[in-house]
Image (cartoon, rainbow, N blue to C red; front, side, top):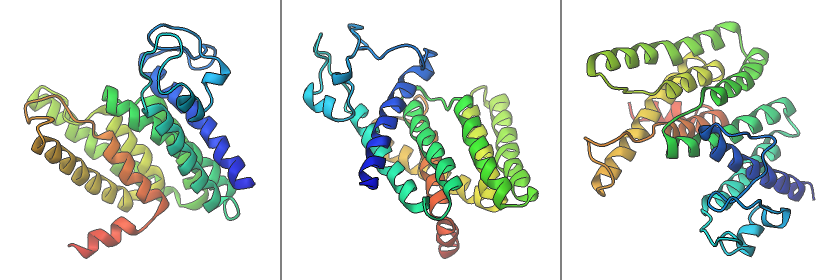
Length: 253
């Protein structure tokens, strides 16, 4: 029963994450404003706003104007419920503070992931909340050298590299949101693990670009491919399976 309740709770959280994903990059109110159809603007009733079930009930269309509802909405709700339940079941009995902080972080990872896919940005406000949550755990679990040098190595070299690239090429090579996110992750991961995160994120991002080029979705002259999803995927592995990427790196070097 507890597992079911937790799953339902995170389904509801996932519904709110959809609001954040849509409204934050558009700088819309996320507290007072009620949900409405993005096309006809009709307010959505509570029966039309039940996670996953409402999407099935409405057959994936607005009840009023029949505008197609993106399957991204139920997907985000289900993904949030699955990951949130995993965090709860893993940490509830052994480390409740980590359970709370990691639950917030993984929810913000999901928001960042989908915002970056659509808008090519990682909002600094969300990065800072992620950093604050990770700092709480880092202060408790590690020495000050761990989180200070983790932040420095995650942020400073990439900031200087991005600045130099922009000055030399006249265009942005690595977004500011990506750089800040690496810095925030370094607070908890520390100076060594943040290096593995940077390496594997870059590798994954390169593979994604090559795959998209191979199927003709992008060319080397086209607009940017978001790097944030690669960072968020790799850092999730780092947070929940510490040591895995290090062992993988040592195995192939």
